[in-house]
Length: 89
Image (cartoon, rainbow, N blue to C red; front, side, top):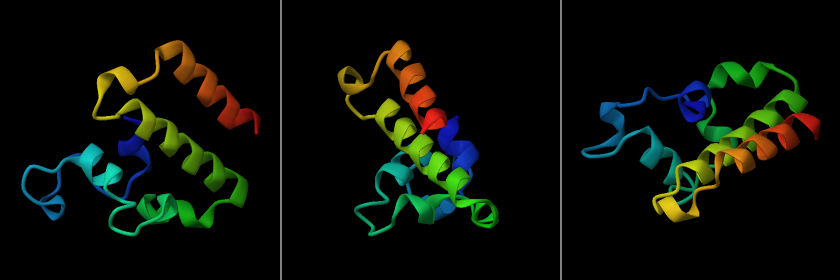
């Protein structure tokens, strides 16, 4: 849900290609040479640097939470801690 709110794309978009959803598209951004800032919705470009920094950090948490290997995904307690760190930094 976090990735949906921050991304420039819809959860399912023809632009992703066959069999690719938002999660796979976001995870593939670095392989395509895109930075986290580039996959954020452009409407966020007008907000403060501090807010954009928080959004990028939140997106990174979302990436960790959607790892293809379920065993690598953090428990919810850890997710809450990571998100609290985002807002406190």
